[in-house]
Length: 223
Ligand SMILES: CC(C)(COP(=O)(O)OP(=O)(O)OC[C@H]1O[C@@H](n2cnc3c(N)ncnc32)[C@H](O)[C@@H]1OP(=O)(O)O)[C@@H](O)C(=O)NCCC(=O)NCCS
Image (cartoon, rainbow, N blue to C red; front, top):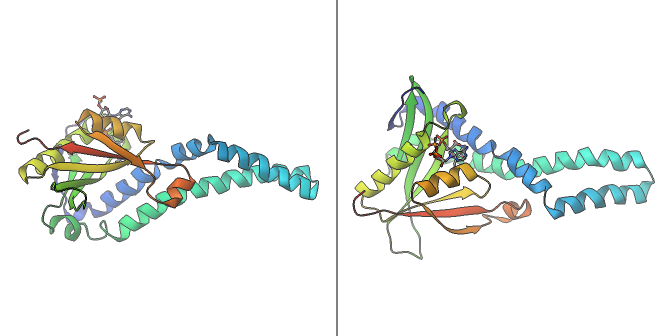
């Protein structure tokens, strides 16, 4: 296990960080696809579309050909919101990372470095929550390169965030995570976060039956 250290983002990290973020998010597409395949609505689709084609055309070949077509359709449908999320972030906060995270009060961006390579990332920004009087910080874009996972890097990055929150006088750290992302949820629970609720973030996530879990961490007065 190579040693690693945590430091603030520098401009030369931009491309690695953007790629790590995109790959980390898109890595959830296969699991989400199999999740959707197991839903009753997919089962119905796989029965009804070939069935309707057979009744309409009496062609067994056509109805069988519909099956791979449906698989491709469902894969694209699942990938679409992930791709939109990635594209949106790459064109907004991850476009000019220094401006988004290192020039704004309360925001910060850290990377984990090992053997002169960036192998992990995380960032935070203050979040306004109308329903709460607490000063909240939101954790975003936690990701670790696949070859460096399982070494405690995400845990150290999260600990850096929690320490920052305490030093800056925040009351809570909040985040959202895909409900199928069990490794991240286990990490957050191990670090003291608790799940406040689950919801679909928008209609498209509801269509593909993927919820987000919302987590909170209450910052103690001294860690
Ligand atoms: C989730 C992720 C950040 C974890 O990174 P990591 O550096 O491998 O995590 P760590 O080694 O610090 O693990 C800390 C704890 O997290 C949990 N954990 C991490 N990976 C896990 C896995 N594959 N299965 C189960 N638990 C896991 C464990 O509780 C672990 O503690 P333990 O080793 O004492 O059991 C990494 O898998 C990743 O980058 N995934 C893709 C991007 C992503 O999903 N980010 C989260 C967005 S909210």
